Length: 402
Ligand code: GLN
Image (cartoon, rainbow, N blue to C red; front, top):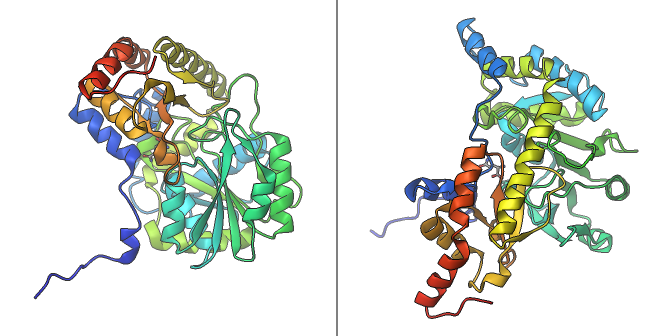
């Protein structure tokens, strides 16, 4: 009997995450990993102590499915002063396993099979598969370089009777764009007019540069009851492995999100919820330091990339540079990234991970949530980039671009 395919059609629509694959390749080739966006430095010491303490105090069983009361109260306090979003911790917060699960739970709570979801392209690679897992069709609207500006006519054309949600991400991964008040106001007006939900991933809300301030679209007119704001401590406190995130939403949306979340994961790690609450409660003096440290890292990597002949625009927020590699004469971003990890010893994410095919082939993404030592090691290796690229292309029988 011929072997029957035991896998679902849905699973065939997904590919392995390139971001996470690049981390594995970095390990294999002993490359400096500037691919997957996780810090290679520790969380602040007080936060580590809170996590140890929570386990010792016996906070080791499930919490209430939508999050411990202590964490929800800490999130509500932070949302009020930082995001200017007023949320009742009893009815408007769902804590989940990282913003990744929160995005999935949010989409499943508002989108049915056959519906459409508007997503800006380039996009953080999970949003496409997330929509597919809901049985929905993502409809992509391009952001245009160099400023990653929005063509509002294209956004308008993307709406139709099937549109249920628009996914936003500000500060934006991978471009570093911070959506302006004017842009968010126009998008809010469209969301209201077309009666759709905005799901906004604001995980990089504390990593902004050059005096920019974070603006949550939930605070704009008409948006309070149609916005799901996603955040979490992962990037802010360098705890991406803790898997804690949250959704802020109206009580009606929250009821739906909580049901999906409960059956997906029951609850986020209990002791780490407690430590995350302590982190939020003690963070006010931490944010300015975070800002200074990330500004220094942004300058450092920007300088390294410039020296290596990689042309980039300075990110306005988040912790990534997108570098344009079109002048190097490689076939595409995938060939360049493979060459970079195997020959130069630096791992990056090929741009095509953030675009639908055939997009993104001019770009590669570097992250700078790394120690000075890691960035220095990358600088040394990238110092040999031009020579190694010429050698590689010559061996392949192709001329390096001048
Ligand atoms: N958001 C990070 C990135 O873009 C990490 C993604 C992940 O692997 N969860 O690299």
